Length: 160
Image (cartoon, rainbow, N blue to C red; front, side):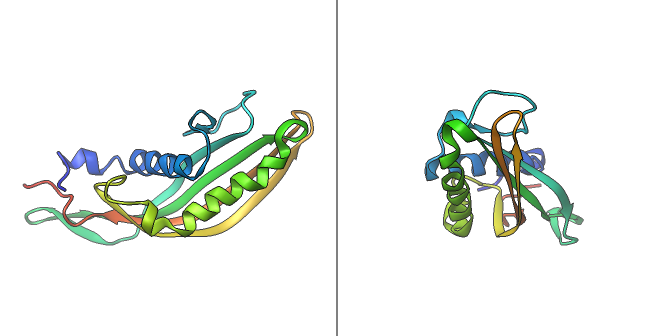
């Protein structure tokens, strides 16, 4: 499906985060517990915070209009941060992490053209998990990082 314009294709961070949020909801994370930002201070727990960072072009180029090439593939990090309250719902921590890992394993089935009409996810690979404890806030926090590789769907470029 062609994008309405090139700008829609270049909004890839927003598109991928929205798709990842929907995938996590489908996996069992409640809608009201997922945020597309890292929150500084909130009482919401458990919660999942997601972000796409370190995005760089791979160097691959595609034709976006006759005679003109542009980058059409990128790689970076998809961060899924899980925060639970130790004394209240700490037992849910690993289950929420498992949802994110499970959904990432099946990324080919999850990142469909219906969810991501102008881009295709070609790789999600777990790279590192940071686990932390904030005793002052009574919180456990894990930051799960996946290396991602995505590109523009061949049919997405709008007609010139």
